[in-house]
Length: 302
Image 1 (tube, one colour):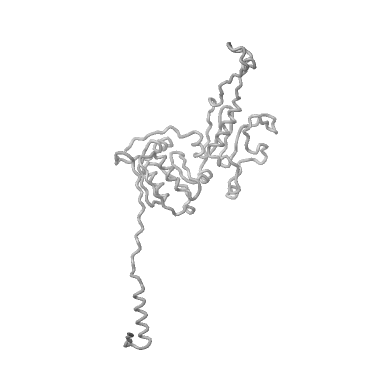
Image 2 (cartoon, rainbow, N blue to C red):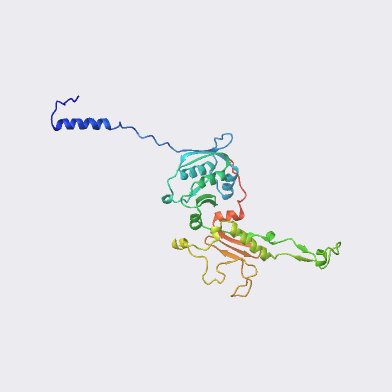
């Protein structure tokens, strides 16, 4: 049965339209609250309310990273905030070289128990990959973090002269004469036996090659087109007949006629064998891969 509205014309249409709209519109519901980031970084083991004093030199920084153990809980946390809170928990001055404009707005969830500070640092840095391959270094008592390309080009390199005298000596290898190899004349050493031993220059070239191949290979590679566009100067002199690299101990310099130096000039680092020493100029994170961490130094708590 149809009931007619006792209202005529456009007024009836307007009332009906408002009724339909009111019935169709869902009630206003508040948006679910966004959970606040949770970041908790504390010393593992028995709680200690005393705070660490600020580390003042590189040995002390490395001591904190190696010897202090932490419990970490991060939930929906920005990586930048997690990096800052980690440095604060260890009492370290931090310079963060990750460019804000290039960092993607990601959030991380991390739960670690009783881990060394260095492991916690590298775990958190593993989530900071959106602007390039991340790493860390210590210079003058300050912890620096950032993409490799930025640490290599925007921080002052470190120069080290490393004595490798002991590494350039090879134990002699005694080669018996043919009569001994054939099983004859066994007994007393034969005066005709020979020794084979690599020269210090040969061993030095192998040492340089192993460093270039194993420690931050990108640092020793030639300049890329991207480097040139960004204005990074080419370390190789275009007049160099060796092209900025020589790892052949028998190579002769075509200009001087003397044995060519053993060296590599890379986009971020250089290394050269001079007698029984290696002269290295490289970013601090590359030098860390060559010489290792310095002797850690502990600081008393307040």
